[in-house]
Image 1 (tube, one colour):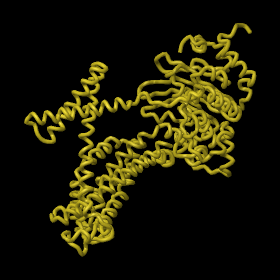
Image 2: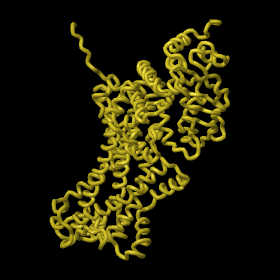
Image 3: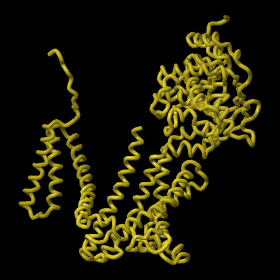
Image 4: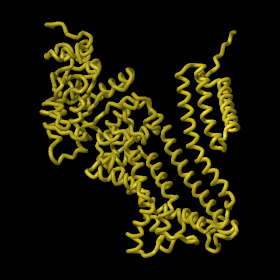
Length: 348
Length: 282
């Protein structure tokens, strides 16, 4: 052996033999549960699942006990429970996603993004009409909410973390309490405080106002957490270089927290994009594209979905599922954008 | 020589420094004067009656065990002390004869004249190397004739120019710890301070980087007043002209002794200083 080259190995990884053993264990557990279902009066999918879970624990326990002793055997019980918990948590999520894709598929077509429901009823064939009006309305109202919430939310966070004035405690409490406000309460508030006494009609602006009530606490709380992560060293360094507090905040602290603050904004958007109740109350819901937020009711995606389901025919319900699919896709894209933006900063 | 120096190795180092630079010889006058400084956190007195002169053109090292108030003391010298909730102080700090705590003083102007380098390197993460150096100008809204010249000059004086001149637009975080600390020194030089406070600037660095920083301090010392807090007595002996020894016996920190560095390490007057510099406690 002249040229002994080292092959990189990972001795801490499972060998193929161990992987096979795990598969055998699962098979044995499946067989046991199958036999038990056969010979006992227990029936149904739930019985299979429960028995499979129990027999997996027992088989794993036995294997580890005979191979390595009592401690790894006990450890295997914990592993089984944690894995089961993971499956219980994840399965419904995938089930929901799958259902939405499956049901929404029928109503998906290009008309959705180019037509509104001005000249079509919800009962018309799926190829006619679309949700352009809802998309435009949601965009405008969420945009208005963002314009209001972004400065208020971030300035609140700066007050709480940087200025730490005497009102910090009550404001912090208020922001936390506000983030738990049911969305319909936000709608009722705008309805009674603005719509009834002043405008006397619903419009996109009212919808944006109601959404901003829900959005401000989300942005403020997330931004606060992000700003708290900025080391106080940086603030001291800025001040020690002769900066005033405000210049230090705006030139050092906020830029350092930029990616986190963008995440806060996106989380705020995702939080309100699907809100239905306040919009039903204050923005009404038109069937035609209405680009003017100050005049006449405005449609929105959640409203479109709600309307389709309440109408109750096969076509209208299919329209709603398509709407859900579009809404969920938008929220999904927002979340992925938030993840990538905050992730790219960490690498730097 | 009437007696043998108490610590031969440290006093050798300090005497070598003395040979290079007679204490006070480079001094053009008092750079900064602390008069009867007391400091409190809440009700707790942490610093009692510190009076010290810092001479222009010299390096003064402040040594002493952890928790004796050295850092608190230098933070009173550029009014960073007041950033800690519950902090209070008494006494005067005279910069060019003016008390920096006088009512109506513009604090930001004081901090421009009394710069600070922190224990942990803290370049601004959202800024490039060049922007970091010039950050002080932006923060304090100062104008400069030629930014490129200032940038090169500051990096040169901090001993970093050759290492970063080809990547000035890289982010500050991409440098090594020692380079980051020299970047922070360059950053504080850009606003042309008269006094530079250094709070254990090398405690997070490896010996090689420490040496570079010490060289930088030597270079800078002729043109400004430098005050350095350090736990490393070798470092105090190497870089400083004067040394002050702080001690707290459980109560507030006090200044036990101050004098030319070679004397503090060779013939300290106080037995507590002697015990500390010979490593018998602390």
